[in-house]
Length: 215
Image (cartoon, rainbow, N blue to C red):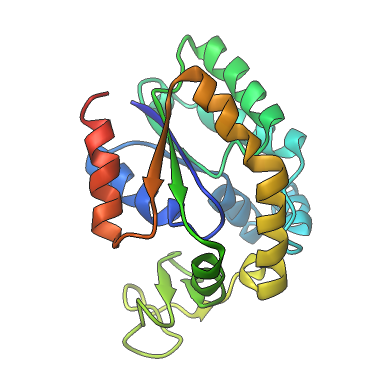
C-alpha cells in the first residue's frame, strides 16, 4: 500500500504515521525527519532547508521534490511506503504524481487528520523531542520520567525551532493558504479520507485502520 498522511501541524500525523509504519512494516518517508537528519549531518540540503523551517516556512518545492525523488528511487519503496509531510502544495502533489507515474504506481489513500487550532497550539508549544532518537514527548500528556531526559535512550529533550508559538502560528497560516487546497486535489481523485484527530490516540488509529483494511 502507498499512503499519504495529511493534516495541520500538531494534528498527530507523525505519531499515527509511526504506528501505521510499524504495524504494516512500511518504509517511512518523512520530509521533516529527512531534513533534520541532513541538517545534523551538515549536509548542504539540510542546512538550506533549516533556513526555511526555523521561521515556520515551507521548504522550497525544488529542494523538497528532490529529496523525495531520491528517497523514492530506493528499492524498498517499490511496493509500499507512507508519506508524512509531503506533498504540502499542489505543485508538490503534481510533482509527486509524475514520480509515481514513472514508477508505474499511484497513491492508494490520503488521510486528513482534523483538529482545532486551540488544541494544535497546545500540542505544538508543549512538544519536546529527543535529540538522539527523535522520540516525542508532551509536557502535559506524555511526560518523561526525568525532566528533560528521554525515557528510551537517555538523550536530551529539546523544543524544535518550528514548535515555538510564533513559528506555529506561521505554519498554520501557511497550511491554510498552501496546503489546504491539496484536500480538493485528492478529493477529486477519490482517495481522501477525513479522520477526527480530536479523539484519543487509539481511536484515531482505529479509524485509519478501518480504511486500510479495505486497501
